Structures are given as C-alpha cells and as structure tokens.
Amino acid sequence: MSAELLAKLTAHGVNITGEGFGGTPEITQSDVAGAMAGMRKEVYEFVLLKYCADARMMERVIERVTWRVIGETFTGSYDPGMRLISRIAVIIVHMATEGPICETCNGTGTYASKSCHGCRGTGKTHMTQGKCAGMARISVPTYKKYWARLVDDHVLRLDGYASEGLGYVSRQLREETLQ
Image 1 (spheres, rainbow, N blue to C red):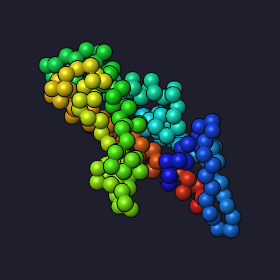
Image 2: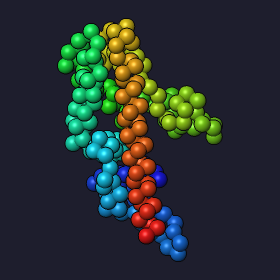
Image 3: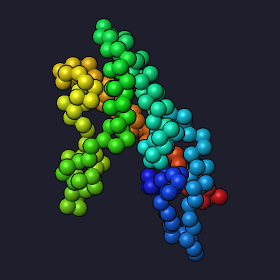
C-alpha cells in the first residue's frame, strides 16, 4: 500500500494501476474513499491533511493538537499563554506533515542503494531546536526546557496517525479485492 493511493482523493490525483490476475484493475477514487470509512476521526483528518493536501483539515488538526498541548502544559507551573501554544501546535503539524528534507539523501530515504542513516530511511529530518524556537518566537533554552520533548511526542503521535491511516486503507482495499 502506497501513500500515493490517498492522492487519488485530490482533484488532480495520480493514476495508479496494478497488475492483477488476467487484467489491469484500477483502484478508483471511490475505492480509496470507501476504504477510509470507519477510520478514527483524528486519524482521518490528519491523513487527509498529509496525503491529500486538504486545506480544510489544517485548522481542525491544529485545533486538536492545540487542545492536547493545553492539557499537557497547564499541569506544571509554567503558563505559556495561548499565542505560544498556538505557534507550538503549528510547529508540530508542520513537522509531521512536511518537515525539512534530509540533506544526506535529498529526501529519497536511500543513499547509494542503502537506507540513509541521517533520516533512517524516511527522507525527512527533524527541525533544529533553534529553528523551532525561532518559529515559536521564544529563546532556545526556553524551547529546550519546556517544549522540545512535547513537540517530539506530538510529532510521533501524528506520524502514528499517518501509519494507522495507511494501514487501515490498505487492509480495507485488500478485503475488497478478496471478496
């Protein structure tokens, strides 16, 4: 299952065909959309944002991440304020959807026919703490002390959503072809 299948949900999606038994069946836009039925809401919204570039989902995903960050930050003695929390949420979503491209493998995930060690085969690298602090308009030590771990945890959660969404669509399409 390739992430490019989800691109079929966009207005100008890619054309994906596969070799089958005695023909060339094509997975249609409605097949992919049907396979996404029943997906958890937060996974569904993030998958549409990441793989289909659905701009309507950007606001929803950022809002969802913002509320999670609020829940985790107000348990301590540090009160960051809503502006900063909103900027941190944007950083989390940016890192999970696009993120900076790995300079070692130029975003391919492979280097000289081997998996790239710099990005662990993903083609993406994490943003530096200095760049994240600059985007949040706070000092680097403040970012390191209060936000770095939280941002990493949320980026991993959103990456998990992407994997869960791809796996879900893959299983649904596999079940459809077996019937």
